[in-house]
Image (tube, rainbow, N blue to C red; front, side):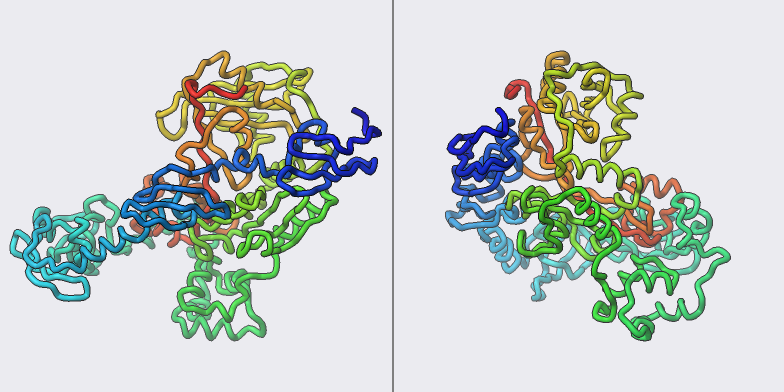
Length: 598
């Protein structure tokens, strides 16, 4: 249908054309009442069928209707919109709750569950027996005096007895005289604690469990021996290497106490940034941040500079490829959250997450995930760009190509019916994914390619599930050549796999910091468990970024870093790293018996 033909009055999906002035756009009204100028080519091709109201649940299945589902003691009666649901508690109470809190397990009852636990704790427990403990006397303040079956008497929290957190004084595992690493046990203290003496002479109270599982081996005196060469060899970061490079006296003095640190900070003629303090004191930004927050000195430091270099670069790039309206640093779209860049006509937003400013030191574990959910509720595709990704030139180039593909209008459009399918060897698949997929290639036993003429334009890979054996296959990678839009491409690749390999079920994961998961619903997948996974994380120090798989405690012990702490967190914090959490993944499942939409 040529552009010269007036389409006023015609209907495309949920759109009704109100006015076609003869250009490339027409004024349309959606069935829900929203009016918008829409590209006529998008109407004809079916790329736009509504303002988004009818696709909301399909594009963002995380917000599916929960009516009738049970969460703890709550049964969902009705979806109210705006992130609210009406629920009935097992006690009979009907109330309105926040949908995210109920789905995430934060809210499990109307409050009666908490009250029951409070009443249990308030009850007089005198004479009652809890495992090896018998309560002798109520002491007030939710504490009791209890006697263990061995005769030892101790003060205990009532809640610990009721929940079974403490079962005895520990007499059944007497460790006196035994040696664990550099520790020698001197005395049983009860409550799971023992008094130990280290080889260096230090005496400390240590939890039994940390001795038995090997997580505590000394008082920490071995750190100096392990520090030399290890950090540089494994992580290549000279900032922590002190051999032949000691900090100066004034630098050491400045961080000795809260008073000295404040005195040093206020000696500047301006509010210093964390990077300035890190450079001047020759310590990591993470350590500077912990000192500031610990001593409550935020008002004396420029914690949040106006804009990072990366954020400015991202905005300049968006401006160079998109001629539409770009709103900067707005809190009006998904309050109280701020969006660094928002493209109203595209319903796409970008957030540049600086390494430190978006780390655990500033935000909690679920901050980025909750911000993404807030964007989804407002029909906005929020794309998170993490600084450690932007600092890697290869990943940066991939991100730019991805952004061009989703907001640009210059892609070459191909149709799957004009393409052919061919299974690929792992080398060809690896080269293609490493060039175009944000996460690169992951091992797969089945690699299916989509060709236009003799050019490889898309790939879909399958293999044994990487995170458990509950499913037969995992859809591991779906990747397109930059600059191309292949209509029906994913469906053609998936249909080939289903036809040839006849899988009973398939699992796949969608990173919601970048993608919506819309393609999975097209392929007949459903969202597993109707929720997001727990956010993943990386460890950052300077320009070094390490995944949680690289920093598993067994690997840290292998590199002799366990002297820096008892847990992964302790070790990584003590050598200057800090965590940055992402948004988690949507887990999608395809079942043969449920059929598919292809």
